[in-house]
Image (cartoon, rainbow, N blue to C red; front, side, top):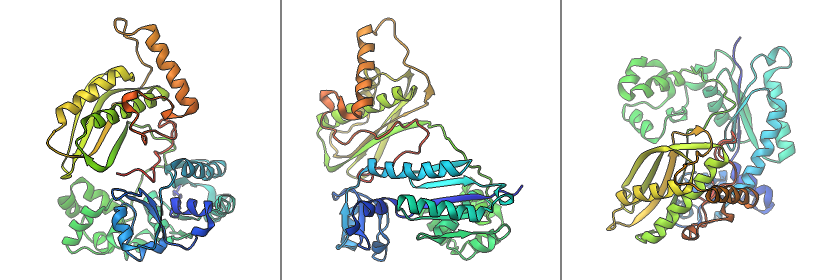
Length: 404
């Protein structure tokens, strides 16, 4: 049976939510993201794009390009709430769907044509989302995920597009090569240096030529350019790691501040592990200096989710990486090699009081929020915390006010 895959994308999601909150923002140029000079644009309205503004660019540059834009810090909790509203509607109407990000969904509608008509069904779903949430949303419908995603991007803003079976290549052919998912800035530049401009040119090339230029990725890009993709819709994807990082408004050499933030990060991620009944066996620390040189180091450890084991190990890694003569721009930590399991008691080092303390602190955090209890050394790290359990099957939320 031929596949029918639907791709749904909430248009300029953060901007749309802000406009729902304040109608005075409608039709005005709007930037959502970090408000300091080090901030990054998480989302921008269509009104700003004519000035050359795009998501991911430094907020300072965006404000220079479009000085009349309204800048909003944003709220991850509010965005999560509206995303959940859309998710609930899709969950109610679609038998198999994948939430690939806070504002993006795939659904497998294969076989529904014989009962209802996939395009008609998708149209009704889109109209229901718009009517019940007030959020604009676009969709693409085709035989696979890649073509449907490209179709959605071509349909925007707030529209829909169906690509019939067998018309994938003619649809993709006239598009720019950077419209192909997986072609980022660097790959785009490599292909442009070869004289490639349109997808049609890639379609006419032999696949092995793309492989010689880009390796394994070249074969994948060639297939996508030809509308070939067998990736299934996956309703749940197990997380293999969790991480957090902090970019400073001003580069710093304050080692006490750096250590305090690392302790707060470790404490929070360890809580997330226990919250999801997970253990980590590999930890890593990342430091980016003011010259943008970035260094990281990882360490394998026995499986654990305990603060008193993880914090000393993280600080040990930090000490081996830290160069006192250089200003620090960013620090971060990551826990990987995650497995299901609860903290194993160490018969020699752990006490009943310590284990009971962990349980009590976690209970307080579950009820009152991640930052309701902190070590004194981590009190300066005010922005470290999560809005939800990272192991609940939902994709990670991109915090609009966090700088990357």
